[in-house]
Length: 425
Image: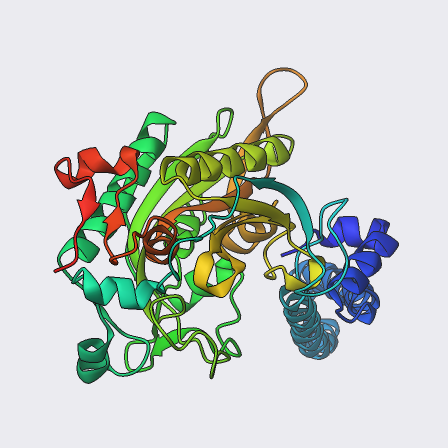
C-alpha cells in the first residue's frame, strides 16, 4: 500500500499519479479525510481513556455516597470509552480500505496513458525475413515436430490447455534450467515455491482477491492458485524484519495459473495465452534507495536470456494505465513473432517500491545516530520473468526451417543433449 504520511504531505504527486493511470484522483482526498477522521477518533478515545483511568483512582479513594456517585459517572464514562473505541476502529478500517484500494505511486518518467501508450526504450536485433518460404506458426511447427498437442489438452482439461511432449517438453525444461543456472550465477537463491496461497498472501502482494477475475480460487479451502511465483516469494518474509544491506534475491520455479477471463477470442490458437504454464521468476528485496538500480539489473538479466535464445526483441516502458496496481514502473521485453508480424511480450520486470512490503509488513532495521538499533521501515520489492512457456512460441517460429524443423539456439544445446535441430517426425 502507499505511504499515507507521504500522501498527506504531498497530495498533488499522488493525484498526478492517479491521473496518469487513468484512475480517480479524488481517492487521494478521501484518504486524507479518512486519516484526519482516524486521528480525531483516536485522540477522542485516548482522552476518554485517560479520564477513565483518573476516575478509577478517585473511586478507589472515595467512600459512601461520594463513591456511589463516582461509580455512576464511571459507568457512563465506560460506555463513552467503548463508543469512542468503536469509532476509532471504524475510522481506521475505513482508511485501510481506501488505502488498499489505491494503486502504487508511479515513478517519475513513466509514460501516461493506457495499453497503447508505451514508449519503446530500444530495439535489439532484426526481425527475420522469409524470402524462400512462407513461415509456419508455432502450433503447426509444434505438431510437425511432435512438440505440442492442443487437441488432447482440450479433451483432458478444456480450452486453453495443452500437452508439451517430446522435444516440446524438453525445450521447456531446457529453457527453465538455463534461466535458473543464470540466476544462480548472478547470486539468486533457487526456490521451488507453493502454487496455492492464503488470501492474505495474495492480497498482500497487491492482487484484488475479491474482484480480480483472472485468479483461480479454491472456495472450499479458501486458497488461491498463483499466477506467478512472485506471490509466494513476496509472502516468504511477511511480518519479518530482514537485512537488505545487500539485495536479497530469489529465483522461483513454479507452475502458474490464470483464468484469462477477459481474453475471449484473443490468441485462441496455440500456447500464447493459456490457463497453465511454467516460469522462472526473479524476486528481490532491497532498500528504497537501491530499487531503481536493481530494476535495471533485472532488465539486463532478462535481455541476457533473450540473447541466449537468439531472438530479436524490443524493450518498452509500460504506460501508467497498463501497470499492475503494485508496480511503480514496469519494463517489458517483447520478441518478434514472424507469423503475427508483431512483437509479443515474453518478459516483464516491475519495481514495486514499498507497496507490497507495507501490505505484508516486511521491514528493515535502521541504524540510530549513535550506531545502535534504530527504528524500522518498509523494504522495496521487485520482480522479473526470466523464462516461461510462451518463449517456445517465438523460438519455434524464429528458428524454423522450410520443412518445419527447427534449429536449436546454441546456448540451449547443452541442455538438450547436444541436439542441434528439432526434426520433423
